[in-house]
Length: 197
Image 1 (cartoon, one colour):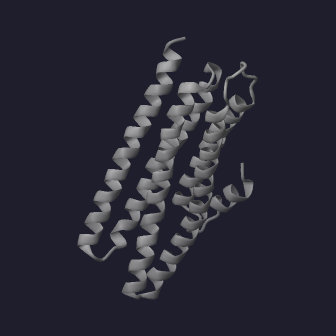
Image 2: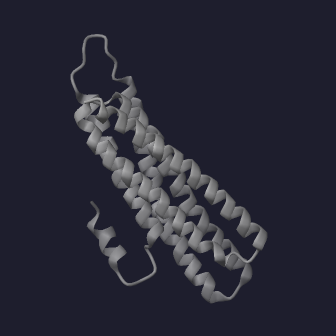
Image 3: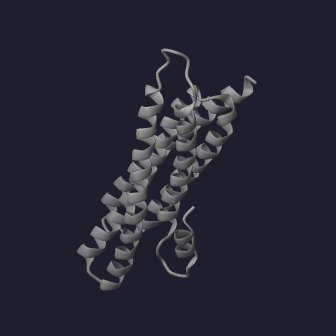
């Protein structure tokens, strides 16, 4: 864990806030998934059996985790800029800051969805006793996705242009729905494996 981030999050100030927390939660999920992938990669194999899937997946998990770490930092900066822009009373500066404050959690949602899609592939191939860790990761990713959606939606009212606000609202809803579909598929894939035992 990162005690310093959790301490920062608990402070009575606007940032870091919910978007950064959503990214952090997704990073915890990715760390659990990486544990499973590394355990599978390191286990002894039968002659001729390749570890290529696990090596490739390990790289993919690390890439998503890096993206989320970057988004966690970007969300802190975006919300700080939004707070400053609201105080500055400059419509153009405010519009730009709001776009960033909506875009960043939207990207966190997209990364969480990618994590869920990767989770299905890992869950289909890993040993049975590792499924429960993946189920925890699945729920953390689902929570991160929905949490980031709420943060992005909360910032939409600051957009002054009604047409742009409606387009962003529709885009976020589409991303949320696609994420929920990925969450349902991941839950079903993992659940199917546990029900067979």
